[in-house]
Length: 166
Image 1 (cartoon, rainbow, N blue to C red):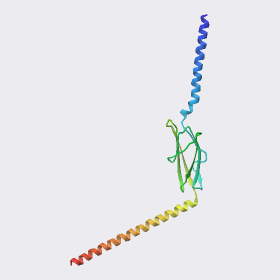
Image 2 (tube, rainbow, N blue to C red; image 1 turned 30 degrees about the horizontal axis):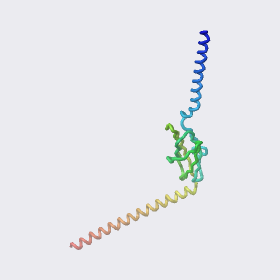
Image 3 (cartoon, rainbow, N blue to C red; image 1 turned 135 degrees about the horizontal axis):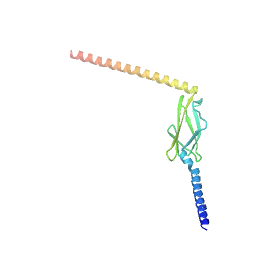
């Protein structure tokens, strides 16, 4: 009789232990993503990629993120973690920094160096740069002329005052 009680006790204890193990394993499998942090990916962008257009349409996924920034500008994320954004590229090298942060303040960062090879942009930049340099030279010459005129006027005034006193 005592043997039946101890067997029932063992079975009951074993079932309770199995139940707790099942609950722990199930809970861990359902919440493991929380400890993984943010998953961040960009679909249509590679490091070192060259673009001939000034406009870059970015698309990607930021799973488990509550905040996403591209070059320190906040971007909206939908309920599935997908995002879309449009960037204007400068002529030449552009550095894109994409950061995502989850609610536990874990974050992930991706950095891309991309090139804008648009000829019109480079030509336009060169023309603006040359015009800027030319404008600076003109202003410098005007400043020299003004200071020379001021010096001449001062010398003339000094001479006039000397003549008056003599």
